[in-house]
Image (cartoon, rainbow, N blue to C red; front, side, top):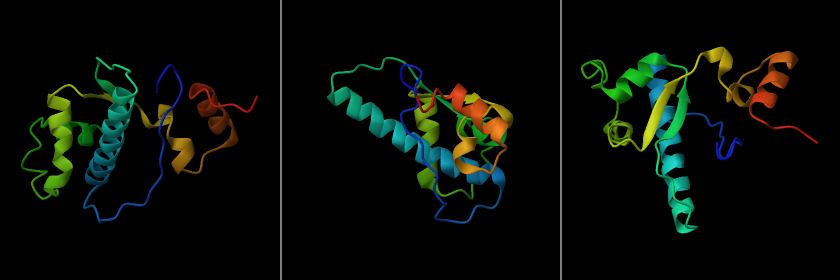
Length: 131
């Protein structure tokens, strides 16, 4: 989010099979980080300086642990190496992974069937409204 408004959101079917939910989330996180890096590059070309880590809200604690390399190295050794650049971005403080409970995850209204009440609540939180 920039100035409280969402900048990028995407719903996409994964190209490869994941062996666990954590792996699937980690693979999706990798795609998210790629989008963040591209957006930072675009903003830099527009002379907009971002001197802070970009927050990414993740609702899977295992995926966060894999990205932060908190003792998950042996469990994550089968994950394709191309996804592990996320670890570098976390280590270099380009991104800041924040745990967000699933019920508070703003992106859910784009990817999951939810009730009208929750949909409207998430729209308000994401500051997306038809005026």
